[in-house]
Image 1 (cartoon, one colour):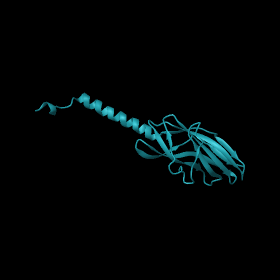
Image 2 (cartoon, rainbow, N blue to C red; image 1 turned 90 degrees about the vertical axis):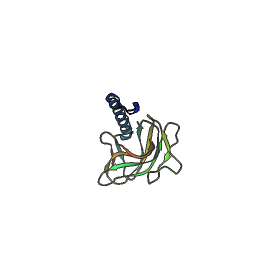
Image 3 (cartoon, one colour; image 1 turned 180 degrees about the vertical axis):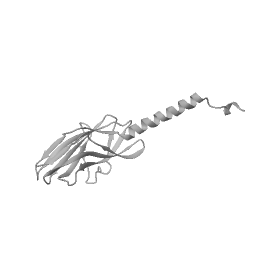
Image 4 (tube, rainbow, N blue to C red; image 1 turned 135 degrees about the horizontal axis):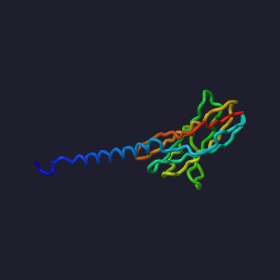
Length: 165
């Protein structure tokens, strides 16, 4: 039997399997929760018929760069007492902000490139439509990373309430 056809030692095979499993686990972790809801007021009170602006922050925790192309505000409740008038997305202190369309997209040709640890601020212009309240369920981000087009939710820990009085 030629020397190239010898069996691979079991130790080398096991180490190769472990290395592949660790690489897959790291990729899965980076894809599973790359965006984390970081800060913002846990309770907002609006006056019925009036608008107010509220800012929430999301941090990117992925393993490599990501390009954000859009986002949606997730409001929860049987009836929507709060109307989202507009959403401005701000990435960094020098960024003037970009307004999302009604479909949650940035203008054609616009995008936000993030590195791990970067933050995005969502400035929500809210209108108090009817008395009652809704929960903020977070933000659904549309982005590209790792050569893939992805959608991921950044959900707050606990209840974030928007009340209309």
